[in-house]
Image (cartoon, rainbow over all chains, first blue to last red; front, side, top):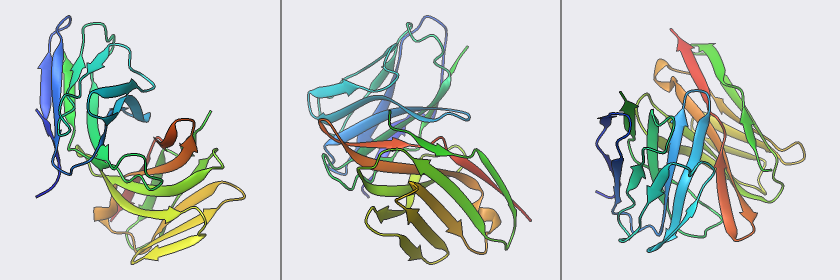
Length: 114
Length: 113
């Protein structure tokens, strides 16, 4: 089955620790995205990548880092510099550069900082 | 800058119609979309409309687009308790460097039995 997966579903971390969220897709999509969702604020774009070995900052990139070494994978690291990291994180993928840009979303990772 | 706005909450009775509204600012939209998010899950595309259309119907869903007013709506006929979810409006538009897609804040639909 083609799709996009995220792991883990729930993640707890202590303040001051870095943590990496996994995102994998087998849809052969070039573009991948990371969003943060907070109640009442919708989706805010953290980082996106349109091709392997290239990525761009979104609207709220501070305190986050990403890599895109493989087409299928786009991990997100939440660093200790992110002041308020508790949130629901969504990964998505889509065909690159199309006027029709349906995004396929993973099930999300809920990160809680203790 | 570009923006997509939605009201945050809507409550309807089971069997009634629901109408969720969205306004957007960018006039170079190519496609507009409605996504549905169930609790604790990712978003799934419900339906979309090409920007040169003004209406699209898909079973219980009707999408209306008023380009002049930059207003998009989603009507759900015979709303069921299973329709309770968050509904996101989104648009793709041509930006410097290529196409960009932005999402609204989502409208939480409550369906009362």
